Length: 98
Image 1 (spheres, one colour):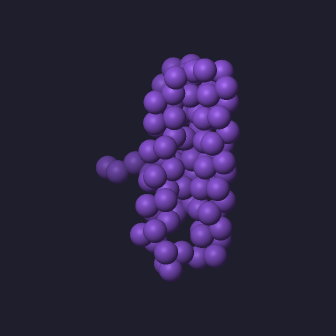
Image 2: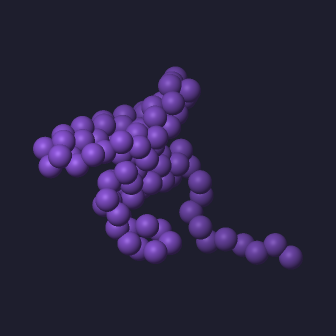
């Protein structure tokens, strides 16, 4: 007998926000989902999430609603801006970041 779920439906927006949340974990903003522990920024992980979202933007161009497109553009803008800021801060602190 199949169980019913009360989980919200999977949407394009939820996919974008899931990838953005993963980037937040890599930035060290959110704790690891399993342990709750925060870690040092992992800029390689952040870059991978940005690259995935950029690919998603490219592959879905012309097929998104205005709201979906705006969400994706804003998330990408914010992540890219934050990436540059964190990378600059790491350089000023002379931390070696891959």
